[in-house]
Image (cartoon, rainbow, N blue to C red; front, side, top):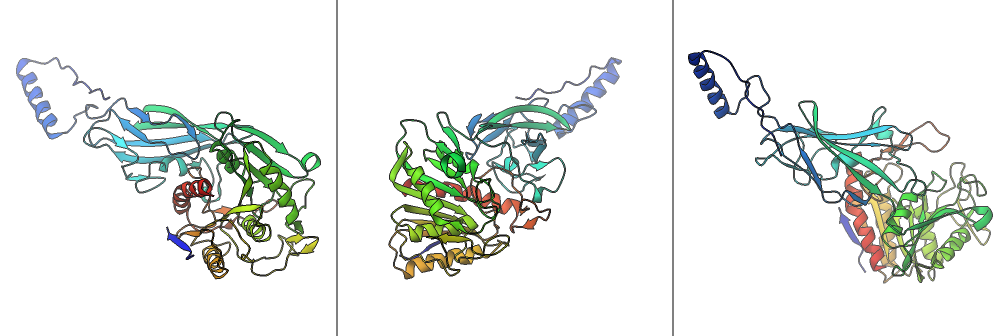
Length: 438
């Protein structure tokens, strides 16, 4: 099978009453009429709306769902600033904004209108959301964290409209991490033999593949937001930590692949999981582990999602040595074998990735699957302008440089905030479709 590559309501101001002699009053009225016909304003705000209405199609929605925003009640051609504001888990304020010119009906539809200036450019209905910036600091090195889903299941975004420096409309939308009925359990090495956050769909939901989520070289338990959202879409999901957690290796070194197998077995035993299907979703070094699992345990892994993948086993991080073991022996530092992969594979990569050449590596993975005559569907999505932050769910502000724990140096991930946001907006629905078909 050939690898599929996708390059991927106003109130008018009143004219002030003027007490003058009749002749003077007639001249003033005539002047006002001329100004009104020409569209001008003399010493008053007759041409500016004092109130605007913000309509949204979903005041409460999952954080990965778009909100369609429309502002009405403006004067035709009125210039306004539409903004989104939120606070992160530390209480720091973030804000995205864009200046628009209202249409002839006195409205601004963010899905159809391009701003003249703002924190983003081009037509993008969710631009004011993902382009929010912190009040201080470099947005390229800042990552919006509204609080982990287990402790804060939703966060609020306040939408405002301002004209001439004055707020004329506002409303708040709620962005949820978990849908009603989703449950959560924290896993610890002492009790469960692993570290992670397990999110389960509502009781009685249709059985679907469990999704095992693996982060990268940042360590700890990552991918919590992904797990909460995927459970809200009906997939039992486990965000697994495999190093950098008390009770686990301190660094990415000598991590046994059997540890992931144990996690996958636990996941497929969950009440809402299809016991015959587990999908492993790995990011960066986690994608390396995911592809190894797919190749070595084809009876267990029935689908693989690879974000910013590597096609070769590389040394541990940050101190080198062997990253992975199997049966107590190091996994050789060679190209990852894919000839035994039995489920579909989806790789997502950015063409401007500065961590490693994930786009080329993803395409090599597809070619190897072809060469091995793997019949399961396999596809790569390449977003030419995106970087290592090409995934996963959309609409949350994210930087393009990141520091590892214990380091003050922010390494460039490549791409731009806008390119990464566009990739996530396009790619996330395709990942959901992949899971539905897995």
